[in-house]
Length: 188
Image 1: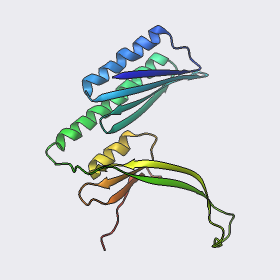
Image 2 (image 1 turned 180 degrees about the horizontal axis):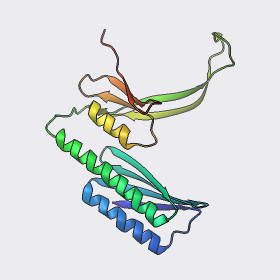
Image 3 (image 1 turned 90 degrees about the vertical axis):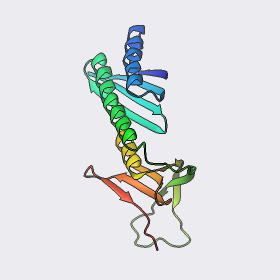
Image 4 (image 1 turned 60 degrees about the vertical axis):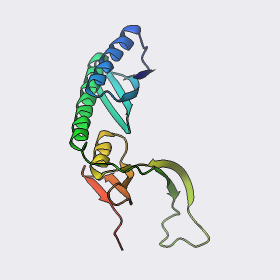
């Protein structure tokens, strides 16, 4: 497990680095497939925040905790991540007997378009400009695995995946009321 640390408005002392590394080593006991860990420690006035992003086998987990003490923030985020990893491991054991497809990931693009004024119709000669474009890998996974992946990710509101059962592209998204929405194509 490789750990990288970044400090924002805080000096990363040896004792702070050692404490963080020691606490993160406990995550390896919960889930042995942790590959890469990135830690960001930041201080803003009285708020001391610890953010951790974990890359594991086909999984990205993000957690953060904020208190008035940096050591308490580190403890809090490690506790959160430990619970998330244990929950993931339990779900993986439950689905261990279910065969997974050997389908390959495909790449799709996500575009943010600039809309013109408040006109009802957009003229044919005026197509919206592309403000931002992002390519993402769409991995084959079950719906349960997709739900778990979206729950474990604090920052991603949408997950695009290939449904293993139907071999079609699906979208899972976080609604404004906190529930999850699932978009799947209708069979013709």
